[in-house]
Length: 63
Image 1: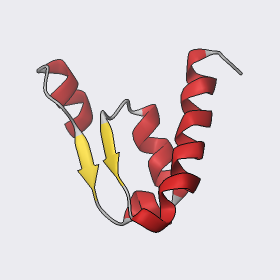
Image 2 (image 1 turned 180 degrees about the vertical axis):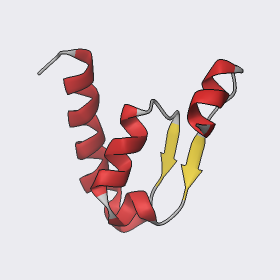
Image 3 (image 1 turned 45 degrees about the vertical axis):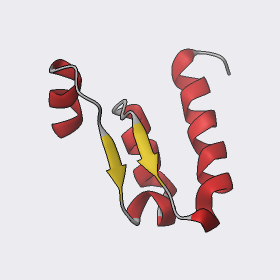
Image 4 (image 1 turned 90 degrees about the vertical axis):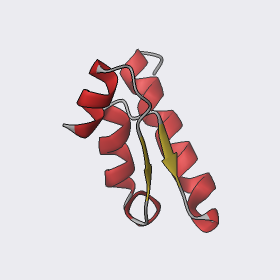
């Protein structure tokens, strides 16, 4: 609901926390909800970035 409210009110939405770094399904949920940014732990940046790119490509019909 927060992401939708931010979008509706033309505000940036981002999440800084451990969950997207440790649980790719949380990052997937956030991407599908169209969050603007996700902050990640350095050790998970590559893995989650690849997952986010895959999800965004599927959502845009590029895969």
